[in-house]
Image 1 (cartoon, helix red, strand yellow):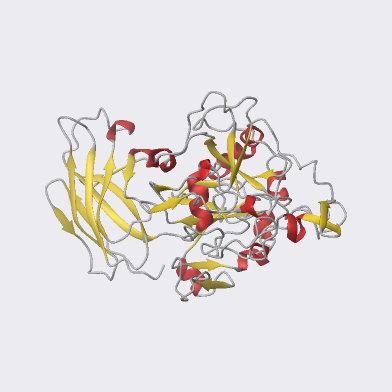
Image 2: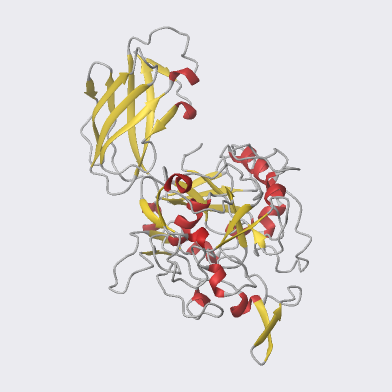
Length: 456
């Protein structure tokens, strides 16, 4: 990395800067205080300044000269995707090996800022822990041409202003290795961002589940650049028996898979129960050490919109027709740009996917990405989310986290994004449907998400 860093050491009594003066970003004003006697929690306060982009904060701890092992689960607070300003990290010693060792009389920490990566790449062909099995792509890597084609601020408003200041990797869509042997995820800068989820009542297709409400997501997360493909799914589970043209199946999204099937459950269980180790998600977790899962509904919609709030499509365009929409045709596969077969007189029939690549689902990455570089958020296949469906209007508290409480009479899970055979209104950013978790809908697939934590 070319960005110079500055490490700051702090103890309960004082802050002490070590080493030569460094360029930005800088961490200063570090204080460490335990909430004793009412709590064993330790507050680590600091100030970050001079960060040109969001930073991750690495925490090293010592008792005198002896290093301490702080497990990731023992640390919460402002660790990932941090911008300039005052911040706090909280250490819980009760979930570490130091709970019963007495007093750490010379406890101190070192805080090191590092640029937040834009992408995480998992090589599905390598064993756990193998060299290069997990890679990270940084903005400087892209802009220096190390990963091929890229663009800056791909989506702008009518004034030519960027909806989201971003650099996206477009070369990922032109190399099939990232759709078969490797899994690519984009980091979504969501932590603490307030935004409006849902759609106005005047939007075609709007229903009460989409009532607009203010949402603040608690932290950044990763989400798949593409929907999980047939080939990626087959590396951990079985090939999809419903897509039987093997000559072009590998880069098409997996479909006709159920919520419980993907998680390896014979009956539904409330999130956050872990997926079975024998399932696609379970095997992916074992391979990587990353807590992969479906995104929550609020996470999914935030990632889909990528700054395009209050409008229908994630490139900022308005909907022109609830059935066949010209603006949508650039963004994803749906019923009227290849999802169905025209049979004359303006009518269509369901596609026969064994005949050619022209109809049915499209290879992932075939259409224009949004401002975060995510593909096929509109159309192709409906995508599972973690949330139980709730029939009432959501509150801000409901949408800030995954809805994990099942309501009697509504034993169904939310899906987002629309499918290849439906009308335009079903693929809107706010649109949704639901299915029972044991059902494998013939237009249903998924993409994976993970917490914004760097591993290995």
